[in-house]
Length: 318
Image (cartoon, rainbow, N blue to C red):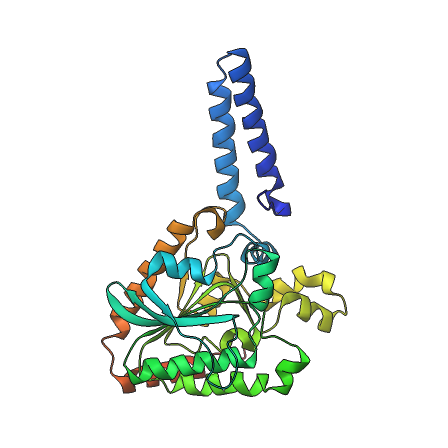
């Protein structure tokens, strides 16, 4: 059964009414085509109005939708000849981060991303999309591999944050993320990052120090989860809606602030409604960005990346 978000219930009510009319028309032989068309137009207009004016807390729900496409879905839809490269060469293959070589528009790239599951079993395998230090070290190994062989890097980010367990802290979670931030800034090849769902805290930034950062229309990108922020400020996680508003987590807000470079549109209702159309939109945006970045020298790429992040957070007092 498809997951229905609380604010989508009026749409479902209209759809149920449409289904009832169709069933009644079939059983009785009555011509109810006019009424059905009227309800279908009403449903379509309501959906367009609803999704054009979503609150940050509602976008949060769509970003976390269990049926939203995952990293491997995008890889299979956008790329060819994907070859996964495993492990950090220090003892573990963290399944929360997956990466490897692939053909994109007929040319080789390194593509790396956070993988979530579609079932409880898969989520346990992928640790619910929360990478451990070994995952960030694996990503760093692949970044360096791509840099050595002059391959563009594409990262897809969808994580509620780095894994906060004791073992992760004992094996250097903070240091692993910090190392990625430093080393990504020094890469001599084009780096593109896309926030596809959740982009939370340093766990997201550890894969997103890029020349060009994109974000899906209903994704979110933030220094802390709205629930975590609400717990700190108001001692009440239930106030996450107010926190989401204040944090400016949406693509439109972050585009204005210069944190991201492009918003990628989603199908009406969210990416989970049409995997192919979503992947096609992402592929087009990546192609356009790569065409621009491939014209830059290694030094220009490093300088552009450095300046991009240095200017974030500037403000003028009145």
